[in-house]
Amino acid sequence: MLEVKTKLDVLNIELSNKGKSNPFESIVCRIKSPSSIIKKLEKRGLAVNAENIYSQIHDVAGIRVICSHPDDIYVLADRLCSQDDITLLKRKDYIENPKPNGYRSLHLIVEIPIFLMNETKIMDVEVQFRTIAMDFWASLEHKIHYKKNLLPGTDDIVNELKNCAEEIASIDFQMQSIRDRIEKLYADDNS
Image (cartoon, rainbow, N blue to C red; front, side):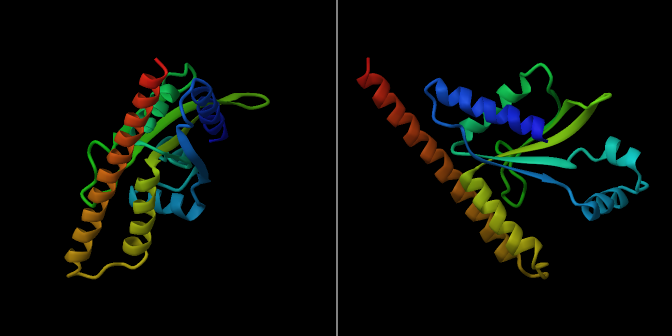
């Protein structure tokens, strides 16, 4: 997890030194709790042991990268995956194909070597890329929906949450368009 975080920090600095604004606002790292790991294995009908954790659970280590604009997500993800010691195992693009509830994010499962004193281990890390707006929606939706165990007959709430996600996505792309227009004005002015 820390290896991937370092790579993203370096990319952020490199891209900002090339005249781009910093592509991300923040990075949050987490290790899945033992109870979450156990629940995930049991849900899949697997024995709770180290081998199954290592081979079957690909998001024990996780990183959430919060970006300013949707195109920053794709630039960072592409640059990360193009590094020669990173192997992309899985990519789920919930920005292009949102979940039915409106959730948007780009999820990558990557494999990276970890150099220990006496060995090199290959480890999986889940990297989630979201914009500030996507993260805002996901955080609130999680608190409202998952923590409250919505009762049957609350379809109007579910629909309203989805509508909010669509409005937020629209604002995300409007903000990106404004940024692009401003950058073009400065580029034209400096020509």
